[in-house]
Image 1: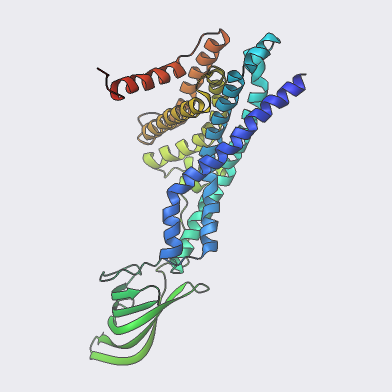
Image 2: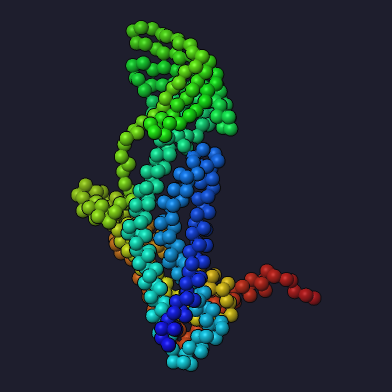
Length: 389
């Protein structure tokens, strides 16, 4: 019987969890969709590169989405069982509130392991891959934004001015390029029209200019003007082979520990490194804490149904991540020791979870849903329909 009961509770949590993962991932992704769409339609980045960008973003989304989806799943599952009086039936069969914990904590443990893998292994690698991909896209000109009537110094040593740019026809007109890459022979090129092409293999931007001239000042030799009907000018990144430095969110665990013990680190950088190291283990633990919070709150949601469970989960998540943001700020500034700041939100919500569970085990109603209903009723009475004469 225990095996059947265990599987039943586990299945009740699985459905809402998968739904929550999809919803929360899409919500987090929607905040980036506008920029991603601009890369495809506005700056000509290949769709395959944008799909890779989304793939590299997913671990950062899942680090937040997995605990959020688990809390929502527990609240909805327990709320459904309570609303259908199945919790009452279980109690009559001798299954106490503590008997509900094994399947819930088993699911919480799986969510914890998945979040730990994302936090410790997948996310740093994905962040580094994303940074390298974006750098490559910039180097190959995928995000080279030609602005009309603006002096653009995107490329080191070169200032470019374009009067008109027709993106559909890939046609530029009224072009002026001042080139100081050779300090002893600066030149200024003018052209009536031109076009832009990209060579991904050599990471070079090639400008094909027509009907113009090159003005060049030669020290000790005077001034030279060279007219042309067609001229190709290549622009390359200032540091095409430079290795990008890693931030703390892109470091492996070994690199984080090595950087923390490096004697040359100043206090702000050291605080960020310590905070990142401990946060990678503190964040996954929220799955276990949410199990302790979700069970007592979920079984007391008899009347509000899924809407009540969803609203309470959002309120808890907002409070939790707000607490994390405050603690992180305190840790970065050194007001609170970074390791303590990383674990402080978990500790506070763990105490709250134990208190909620104790009240629910003693059949004491937690007035969360009643408070929500009372607030809604007050607003309806205060701002709803006016009094009838």
